[in-house]
Image (cartoon, rainbow, N blue to C red; front, side, top):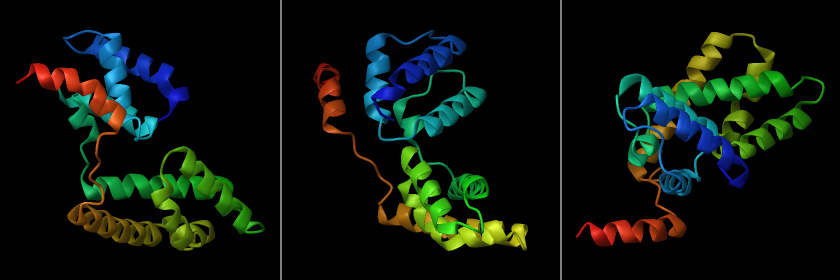
Length: 175
């Protein structure tokens, strides 16, 4: 997310708050959440917050929103995103132009990590000779990559300095 997403993030926080017993969050809490989550794509945050609300009574904590999902589910979601973008923007007559557009769309969503999936699977998605097998192979390979990254600790995220500064007064008061 970036500053352009701040207003729709605030609307999302208020909507989720209205649906939970605690009510809408304060502007300070909304700012804290924004700072703590801004390294994630807005659509992913929205998806995780609404999913949390479907299964839990209370407003989600930052750690619950940041929490990694099951690698199988993550691989399926990533592969569906790639498939949709490839089908929309890559055409057999101009594959490189389409690839560049797809990569730009991924960058806009903060998902540059998926560019190698486009390079590996884009042509097979477009040729569409056996979409079920292609999807299964793509998910299986991407799931293994996610699991490996989790084991290696690559996925672990650290709070940015601005967020840590916002949390300092709270941490001092808790001791």
